[in-house]
Image (cartoon, rainbow, N blue to C red; front, side, top):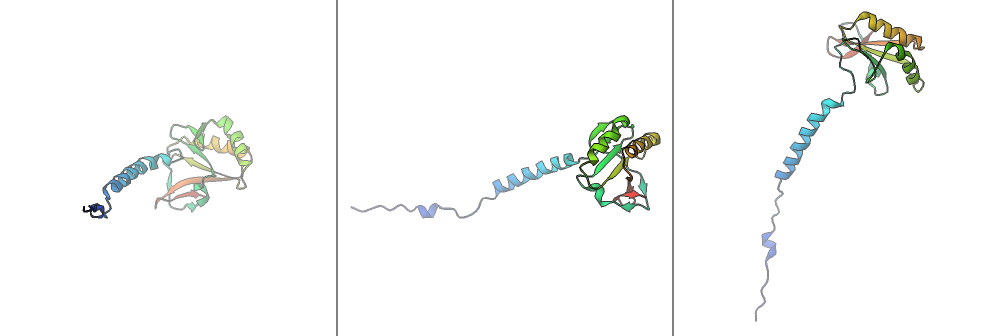
Length: 146
């Protein structure tokens, strides 16, 4: 009686099938391409352009206090819509936890000048002495006019 031996080692495929990996990578790439524009945590405004702006790197930090004024005179503290009447109190509440007592303004180039000045006055009455007006430099870097 002879013993039969199974030769399973001949059936093993040592090649890596990369097709599923490529499929997963393409799906992840599409997900990141869709989600990345949604991560913008700023109110969209068209900033005024200038040639003589001073770069303000602190304005792009996550804990920077920014006030945005849109073309249709809506005022935002961060991403929350507010009014001129409550802006001063909200800014003073925000500044209690900050060592840097500067507030950055992002006003649309077509915004009503009176609304911008009223917002600045409201922030100044809250005790803020230093304000940065963010503008778009001609070489597309965000900076502030002095």
